Image (cartoon, rainbow, N blue to C red):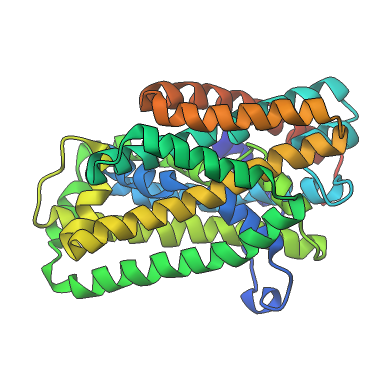
Length: 385
């Protein structure tokens, strides 16, 4: 409710400029910040999280996800604006907003620590946990082999410079998004005549869907768009364009994730539920969905998508941590501590239980939202924008 009221207020303050995007203006501009944003926000949770939200809250949760994502663009607007305004040397985020915008050193350090712990460490645990679960259960690959390959991948990642990470994201993100969209559209069009839309209508009008879907939809839209977490302001600061283009790219990412990805997953789920029962384990749900439509190829395709989504999230998590730390200090010991903890957290994601990871993630996200919303409100009070 707090974020709902705040987003409505900011939308009126912006005179609803947060809803306006001219795609033609953005086509020829540098897209570094857009691909960094998509890299941070599109992870394995974008697929599994959306599917589980529908199963828990019903198909109405899709509508609520889209509605609240639109509303939250006012928060994304200001996050992006201040992230770009107070950046230093092309690097920005909550630390810079609090340090140079509010001149609050204590809050800036706290917000930076929370961002690194939550996104550079815990979010990476979630990626590795989900991917390893599928590798173990669908392909019967041992955890030891997964850990060894993961260490090799992480070792290569840590050798990359900040510029290398951004260049890889610029090349990888658009192709992975395009491939996912095309395959999903192929499945949907191929099965369009076999979809039982009565399932959607019955579920959509149910008590569970109307009320539970509202709660799930709000929570999901916050998580999938990473509202007031700090990734938006960090990505916006990397933009080489003018500040307006930077803001529009961040809002465009919200539309892509909350509308395109959400609707594609919803249709895929509807196709599967038209002819099958829900698996007992939500973790294997999407594997069942893709294998139903594409056979064994569907499982391998989904694994490739998870790997691509996971890689971009890992690279983004590394970028956020290393860029902030290097700005504050180029101390080799401090950098070594970060890199060590980065590797350890990723490996722990393979070993630990999924529920324990999500538990601490939710707590940290709540604290970050409170701190970052305070910063935005404080700055907005003295800003005529």
